[in-house]
View (cartoon, helix red, strand yellow):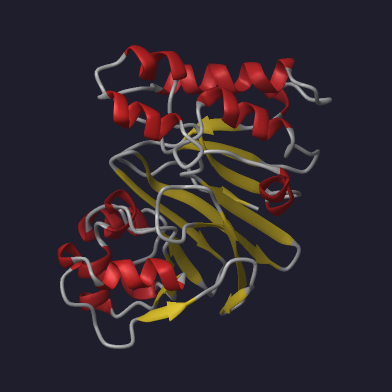
Length: 265
């Protein structure tokens, strides 16, 4: 089972998760050409895809969805609320008949030999979800676009082998930056995005001896940078109430606009 970030940032997101025989994407917020290029780096093509799972309808998560759906007919899995909004969006273009497959939070969906478990997240979208994907006794997760986390989120992300976790912004950079006040409130609110500090605090509750890799993703281009996100999260882990230090784990920052190193679990 492999996890690979093809792109992860406020300008576009796309994650590959797959086994030897089943290949999925979480979101396609980049161009079809960039999706293809990322898959090629994994010795795959878009034609190999068995499904695309959408977290929510914001453009940085679905930008390339229409083109891929029309060209390759890949099934698109999303919650009813997300599907409803996407069907009303002119920017996606006309979608093929029957391309959408409904999924529901907290209900497993099986595609090939992978089990996909959607879980509810707090974000300003119609019906957003994160995903936990399992193959046998291995599992990986993607958790971005969350304003807050709680015990429910911790339970959904427990005992993962690998995780892509949002570390969207540095609070101070955001507060003193040039964003208008309403946008700052949105990002900092309970339906916004996780800060570097909050990501580190959540990670402290998820670490365990067998976790193989953590990717920090969905970094803001204006209110964060890779070294700051990495250092802040690592500091929270090392200083936090847990038996670990950051150096005990492979923690890396997922690249905004190019494919990151794949991890095999």
